[in-house]
Length: 512
Image 1 (spheres, rainbow, N blue to C red):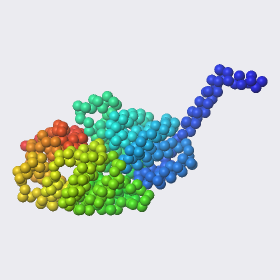
Image 2: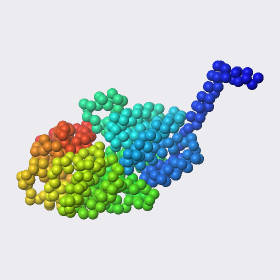
Image 3: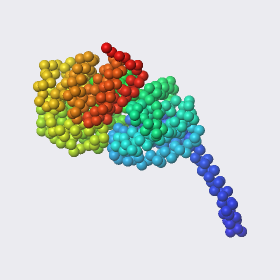
């Protein structure tokens, strides 16, 4: 009888019924997964954003115990590991992040399609993997990650148009698409990309405004993205600084906010602010060490010609398992030795620059090019460059006053001299004085591999944009883009492209 029962139970017809029964169970099991950014998850995210990753892991583990079907934990684990790699740039951390990526995606994919968080978080993970792959030079993979994110966000926006956070990723993508020249946009459109800088910045502002008025979890992140949009895409340095400084003042225990404020200060020639902010960074053992901040402090000290810069660069370079800014770090260390007249260690640092580190970011490429030239910098020009970058304009111009272009034998040094004078006057706010020096730098340096002519063209574009002279601004932005062999080419060209994008909103102003 038992045999007959088993035969009946496992017969073809009943086997189908059994299969369908278990599929229903599996489907119900899948739809049990949800995304709930409750207090545990918000606390975990806030700890990630503050670089307190061990504390974040504690909240994630607590949530997995209390609510095992909350797929938000899969995203938070990814975000935690992404932040670790973003800060420390270790190959082993990238490998782990990459290995866990698909597994975590699948957990979120189990969530019901009626949740606006589902595709939003999937897209967020794709965007973060785009950044991570970009950091290791996997540009092909990075492109397809951002394409996946774009498609997910567009689908989510169509289905949930009132879900404001969706515009965080869309805003970032639209800003980036807006920097692509018109003659290449057909390629972006072919892959489903669209948008412009104005749309992107408006979307980021909308999300930022939304997080200010609500308890939504990504306030630090959206401020981070918005500030960089202001700084690098809209060239609104003052507004970027005010927001970054306010965020740091309001969150003195958040190490990422410390980095953001110091980074904006360092890129807007507020050197004393850089030093003040970094001296206040939280160092209580709960936060990631964030070794890159030692590089930033070393650079700040170097820009005021302070010999203590050496110790900060050495501390940064001691953790030599980073991917980026290592060659640049060795070059800056060499400069600090040169300023102290320590030629022995100067040469050792230069040799290390040649043999250690990667050439993914522009700063490392530039450092290696300069070192491979085997030319010791002219001390006068090096000091003026550092003082100018730190915002010490009077001290910088005083150094160069009384000197002339033709007293330098090397053409590169002649071009750097006129470029440097123009740059000091420009950054100091004396634009009319800067223009003739920039013009000379472009004319004499356009065939040199150094960045002076290309940067001079970019800055001329910025000056004319500020004056409302669209025709000349466009002219010099295009000159910058046309210089193909310049150092820092990628970064300078990107800035010129965003300048052209901004000009589209400006009416032509003909100046006699």
